[in-house]
Image (cartoon, rainbow, N blue to C red):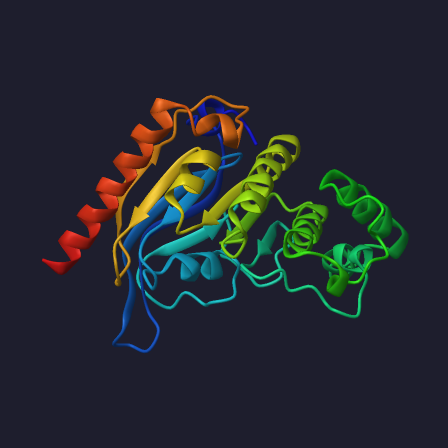
Length: 268
């Protein structure tokens, strides 16, 4: 992950460009309304907002899983999104591990779907499992792994594919507080090492501030952007150290204020 100042530079290419986008699933239920969002290569951008405001829909549009049939445009690396784009990796809220496959085979799976030769996929997956702290668990089935360890396998699978853009939909939302902090630190380290662009959905404002270069606040449905906040905390970051940083709490309060404002405007 690039330094925030570098990532937001005017010369950095766009990883995602959303311009005046509106979307309705059935012609009557408006999901997104006049959304514009530019994410430059190397940026880590989080989306926060109420349930049902269209955060996951934006991820699915970028992944090519939902066709864009409404007003406006969305482009990924300058092209219309298509399903199966090798430049895009997608990590879901659930680990989605296959119970009959070992940790190593699960970590290899995304690469194998993309046609990476087995020996190369195995070498890459083994290295990524080591990076996420699971060396020695390569032959372990998911049923013998804790929830946090399963998410580490999912992280290894996602990063092993080498995609330049990662879409992450509340990947740590179901974890206990301690495990969540550990994996947030791990995610920061991996992004720093591998220099991916990230669009990250979360309901946790503390998490959004801790991991992001920018946090985008959305209203209730139809989802609109009401704030785009630069997170000017220095990198590299420690999730634990940030808890004692007054500016971290100032940014949290600022985000909360915008989130409340979005509700009020929507209700009005």
